[in-house]
Image (tube, rainbow, N blue to C red; front, side, top):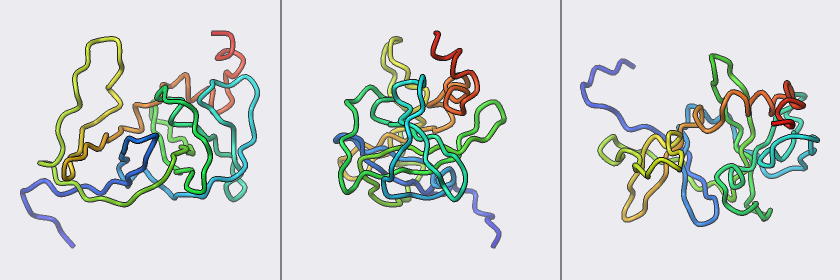
Length: 168
């Protein structure tokens, strides 16, 4: 199937909730969605780092997206899930689990349904929001998963420099 159309095509996003907000990730970054499972805590890691899970023999770090975005910690419910994503930082691809309150759906958004991210002063980082999707009257924050975590944070999550990260 060749795409010769000039128009920008709709992109598929996986939507999920944190608190009452809806967020979206490019489906190309999502490997799978797991039911919440026991997460093993790793000492001296950042607060948002909930620990690690065993995913078919691989150790996968799990981050609490609520804590990362300074929303109160996730209360685990029957809907709590872990979205397994691929994050690229400095050319390295890391597999991460992102805890979400619930996964909603896969959504097609056309380019004209996406507005640029809001510009909010200088104190708040919004560079990890790639846009604001609009569906009906609801805004959906589209995340650039590669920009949410810094290289240092991912190094801490991957277990290298854990001591260095703890001393900062």
